[in-house]
Length: 462
Image (cartoon, rainbow, N blue to C red):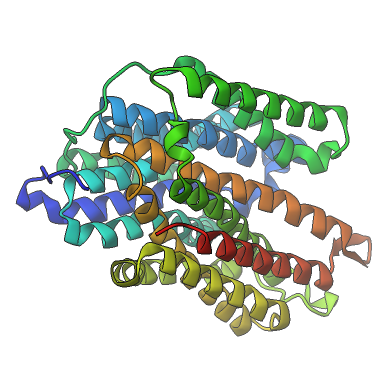
């Protein structure tokens, strides 16, 4: 059951849009630097492999921050941790905006990544503060903001990068962060629902080491070689550390993640479905921009600019916002399990259509709208499934772990898609480019992942 709302009536109406805006702002950081990645080696006087850390650092920091901020929110106050997260985003944006070399930029991007706990913290605040008749729609919108921000970030970042200095990307994100910080201070109350207790430092360190090892091996494996000593060593370290971490979490009295709660069938299967769904979602973000910008001389590329391709992706973010309330209504009527399954079917259909029809811009728009609608339905159902199976005092930690599962799925998706596109190539003059079959295989893989998520969701107990 939800906690009794404590928000003053005059402020209740602002809580949802403020928290959803905070989620979208944080999610924007995922795609913020994508338009300038090809130019970063020249701008920073560094190798392409080194500048890839501008994305990797954000990914690793987000993986570490999400479960830790969730647990700290449950213990010491969700609004407090929300403000700290937004403060880190502002600090990281300013550091990156002032940078002119690689290391400060990577530090700034890592600080931006530490803000990733905003979305699960926001969902948890909604559970504590909103009446039950508004909770479903609000949490669906907050959960969908993860995809919305990523989709809307591409055209916004491309527009800024093409017309202003690349530093403007970070000054704008700092400005957005300051505005959101002020709105949270004004409209979002501190919840009285707290678990108290002592923070599990050893559990936090163990999970951080395990996640960083795993995601670093996944994100760098293609460059280092999947059978190279560093890659295999990191995978081995990740497995060993996570096993030891699980052993510790089962035995400590105040764990970072309550694995007994996480092992409940409804929570476990929802998290597994979320991870596979994260895989399916990110395939679109990888394929569509490349396909749109591929030269027309390839015979299948559409020859669009980065800004044009970003604008094509933009509607998928808007459709996620539109379908989030629909997801909540469907979950209220038929249950969130049915909503999650329907979302998986829509995403699989979108990828299936895309594998056949990808020869024009309007076809790509249609495919991205289908996939975006499915993601909006599914992401809206996930918090409802999680919150109905965990105590109120563990809401932030449980939602954070669910968000982490999605992030792991997107990381694996990036690695798998990279391997596929690197293996299936064509030669265009002196350049080696992904082939049409390569893109088609990635799209079919995304459809298969969505169908796997459907099968897992079907097993979730009601």
